[in-house]
Amino acid sequence: MAAAEQTQTFMVEVAYATPAEQVLLSITVTAPITVQEAIEQSGVLEHFPEIHLDQNKVGIFSKLKKLDTPLRAGDRVEIYRELIADPKAVRKQKAAEGKVMRKGGLPTTDENKT
Image 1 (spheres, helix red, strand yellow):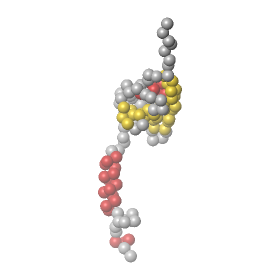
Image 2 (cartoon, rainbow, N blue to C red; image 1 turned 90 degrees about the horizontal axis):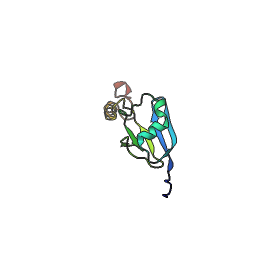
Image 3 (cartoon, helix red, strand yellow; image 1 turned 180 degrees about the vertical axis):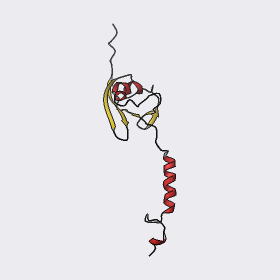
Image 4 (cartoon, one colour; image 1 turned 135 degrees about the horizontal axis):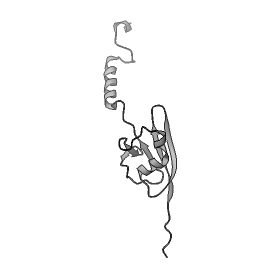
């Protein structure tokens, strides 16, 4: 008679944030488990119906991953929202605004000269 197959359980976290709310759910899962299965088991999809796994990118500890990536104990699965503004464009705009300002953050106008 073959030995009974042992199942391994471990903790993972599922994270998602909106501008108004952020959640970090700790769940106990049974191996083997994928990113998608952990997201589904966490209940985050019911709490945030705007999440669409066929559209939202996902990752583990800030590294993009596919939904079928297997998880290990302690992994943090992150669900990413689409960016509202391009970070490069925002930095470029701030740099352009900074060129108009003089040292100390005051505008370069004649009325500031003493």
